[in-house]
Image (cartoon, rainbow, N blue to C red; front, top):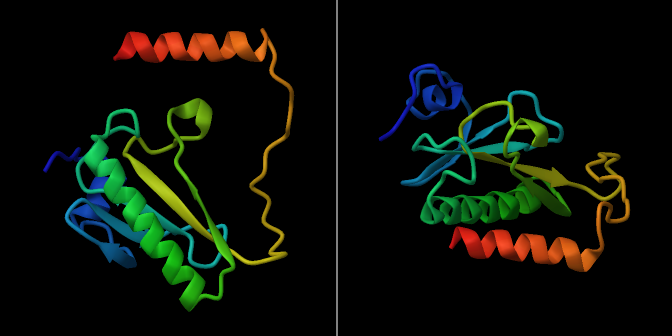
Length: 143
């Protein structure tokens, strides 16, 4: 297994840091967040060390989505959540603090007051069709 000795998530995966494990399979482990933004806030961590979603193999990413679904269902049943948010920060500008692939599952209740929404704006710097073409060209070049 690929790990980094100074990575806090690698230490959690290896049992070097105590954590409240709520889920584990061959590819990931899920623990309760130590600074939760809602009851049952869970962090799913890949066992192999990859920086973020862009570096993780597709199979590992799929395993994380399966874990998200399992934890989300459990939160709805056990904690009375009405729904849940799933998010993954990739790179510093998107809020990634720990350079180890992980996802968050946030159980939600109607009128819980938690605000995860974003400000809405219009597309800038070009028309929608120009933006679409730039994205398509970049994806074509990457394949």
